[in-house]
Image (cartoon, one colour):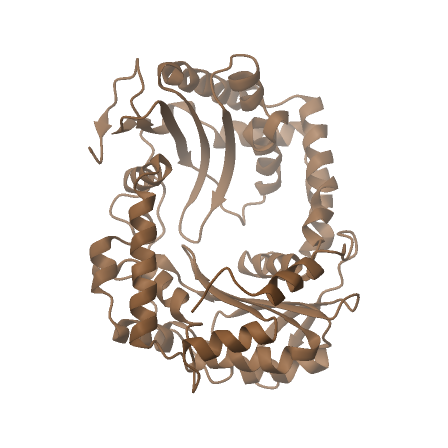
Length: 448
C-alpha cells in the first residue's frame, strides 16, 4: 500500500538535493538512440550515484471518455500498485527496500512517468518500471482502494473555492471541448470506471510513437541505449488516441459568478493567449513577468496589493496547451473589495496593452529570468523534468544553451508590439467564487 512512506526514499530525496548541477550556460545534452530506435536525451552527471528518468506519452485527461472522466488519472494512480508476479504490497516493498521512487501522473495533454534510483539499484529499478509499464496488475483491492482515495479527494476539494473557480473556468472558456471538463472526473464517472477500462488504457494508450524520454545522472549513453529497448520496446508502436480539436478560448468579456457563503472572493480573469511555438513567445514572457508573473516586481502586485491593499496576492501567467492557449490573472480579495480589484486589474491590463512596459521593467525582467534559470538545475530530477518539457514543447536540443540569449534579445519595442497584440481588457472573462459586493454577474454557475 502506498504511503508518504519510506525513510530510504526521503534520504534519497535529501541526498539528491544536496548538490548544484550543471550551469545553465553550458548544458551538455547527449541524444541517445537505442538499437530499436527509441530516443532519449541524457545529461550525464557523476557527482552523485543517482539516476533520474522522466518520460511522457501523448494524450492525457483530455482523451477520457465522457462517461468515464478521471480514467487517465485513475490509471496513473494504479500503475505502480503491483505488476507482473508482484502484488501491491510486494511491489511497493521492493521500491521501499531499494530506495526507489517510481510514480505516474496524468495531465491535460500527457501521461508522465518518473523514476529516481541510486546507481547500485538501477537494475531493480528499471525492471520494476518495465513491469509497471507492460504488466500492471490492476488487482481489485488496489483498484477499489485508489478509487476510494480519488473520490475522497474529490469530495474534499468541493469545500475549496479554488476547485469551483477552475470548474467554472473550464466550462466558460472551453464550452463543449474536452478542456472544459473536470480532469479528475466526478463521483459518478469515477464509479463507472472498471478494471477493463484501466487494462485497455494501459494497452492502447502507452505507445512508442510520440514517446519522450529524458535522463539525468550517473549513467552513460552506452548503458542507457539498450535499457530503452528493455523498458519501452514491448509497448505497441502506435497509441489509439481519440482526436481532439484545437480551440480558441471563448472570452466574451463576461463575468461569471459561483455563489458561495465565504468571506473572500476568488478571482480568475482570462482570454486567449499565445502558442509556445510563436516567435513572440520570449517577448510575451518578459511582458508577463512585468505585468503579473514577477511577484512583488510586477505591476499587478504593486498596483492592486501594495498601493491599494485590494488583494492578498495576484499574478498573471501564460499557459500553452496542445490545443489551446491562455493568458490569465488569478488572485483573491475580501468580498467588498472585489469590484475595485477587478476594475484596477483591467485598467492596468489596458494601460500595458496600450503603452507597453518601461525600460527599467524590461531590464529587471531580463535580469531575473536569465539569472534565476540555473536554479532549475539543482538536482537530477529537476534536470530530467526540464529536458522532458523541452522535448514536449519541440524547442530543440540546443534550447537550454540559447534560451537566455533569446530573452536578452527582446527589445522594448518588441514588448510593446506583443502587448498590443496579446492583451485586451474587453475580452477578459472573469470568474468569481464567493459573494462579491458591487458586481452584477452576466451568469451564474454551480449554485450551492
